[in-house]
Image 1 (cartoon, rainbow, N blue to C red):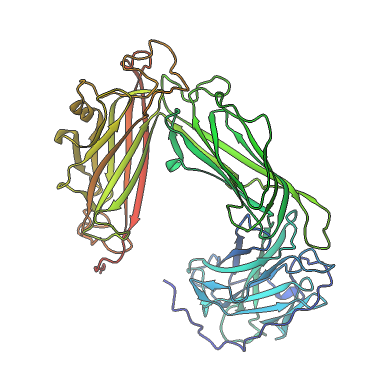
Image 2: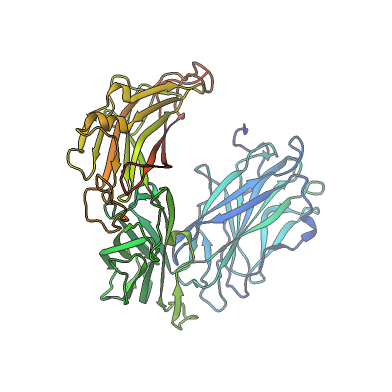
Length: 597
């Protein structure tokens, strides 16, 4: 456990922010003039620095510096008065003027929400900055060399000492990207950890001068625009077939007040995805949006959806450009191959990618030539979707309302499932595991809602028959609840079977014909199981029997659905294959009035 956040010795007088001096030279990597003073540490001060990727021109970017004493000896090698030196590339591409890099946002350095003492010094015309307190073995202030006009930001950490046994800490700060920066290059932000006094707090630099760790670098490449691909599929999954249509949304944020001309937005549909239609398309202050032909087919999966916008003027928001279109995952891909084998069922991972390009002219007088700019190859430009034979999603809410949870509350769990249009299933069960600290509510009878294409097979909120719901307390304190879906459907139907038939599977099967990949039969086969659980006052087993359930504890619930795959030809013969899908949710308890001893 870390000691109280206070210094154990007298701090030196704080230095005020220095004035900027005109930049006269290109920035180069930070180094110490008195390099010999940066000897191998006895008390290690290692750092790592990361910044938000995809940051726009003119945008404020968040950085995190992780500081650690990584010495191998947890009892010795304690460093005193830790700090971090950060160099911000404020000059950017200058000279000549204007500066167009990344500058420090004044007062933004924090640890756990607490503001940290920060000194900002601008490298002078000679590319030198005098450190506010770090001294060499002769007691002289260290002079740090950099690029004239860049910023040396010295952040003092709120610890008198810092040892190897203490966990790493995160220091947060912000930097401001110049709107005149170039999206075609990277600007290096560096961080170096150190201790004002290496091995004690005596302040005698002749025997205990300041020491520094190695320098970490985060190359920040500003973006003219930021592309993001999303879909409204729950839990990134879908059952296959036209009864399970969803929407892809391609959105773009363009840097504030920047104009992109002839912006082309392109979406490459995977071979398994059937395009249906464009539902909306907007571009901020765009006058024309022209589709580049040929577009994707509405009967054959795959293809390219591409539009050109005459111009877009940025606001920095994700809605500067937006393209929304409807799709579903079909049974046969672009090459006529099964997306999911009909005799076995299963899953298929599908990745959809988008890209953008356009022409842009910087307002920086040094870069007045129009430039061609393209979207980065970021994970945000693609969406991963799992196509399934059977798909299951879980949600929950507190009975009586509210979004905070405590011991004594009752939670209502909702399990939604969908069956692919192209499959027939039997022996369907749903297993739910409640974490220790929860118990199924015996006063509430679980219900099922179900619909599929055959008449007489649709039910809403019907109570489960007692034998079709079983529960078991496990040795680890969890509780397993099993819902026999097929047996419950038998109990509710006029027909004595518990099969689930996808929309493209007739009741007697297809007679050997492959299910229609573009079936028009509706509705899709779906269902919902609802049950309730109480949050207990005490745990059964973990962390120990009788331990109180208190604030900060995490409750989890994991569900899985299992079914046997039937032959599509007769919708009766078991193929010997089983399909399964799972879903999990968790929540953290708020103040409940009790505390652990």
